Image (tube, rainbow, N blue to C red):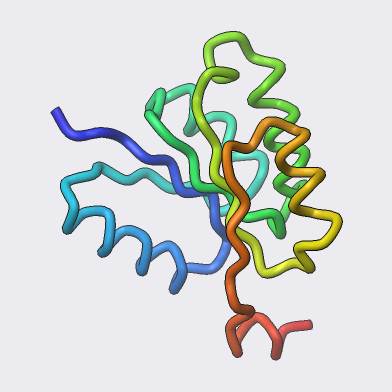
Length: 115
């Protein structure tokens, strides 16, 4: 049985990139594009790992981590935060909130054009 990874990311291009790379390495991927859906998907799929973006609609990634850690069944799932936000304060905050790692991603052109 393949390991399951929940990708919580609002950018469809980024989600597709993760999916292609992880599928090629025999992982099953599931997706949530906002903070509200993320908890439902985590409960439904019980993933082995969560990849979490901080900048999400309907609540940011910190809200998602707080909700995951408050649920005894979901609190044990390791979380890797991957974000284009300024890493200085966010990295420490994410690790203190329970993330196993924080990875800085380059902001993409489409995201920059939206803001």
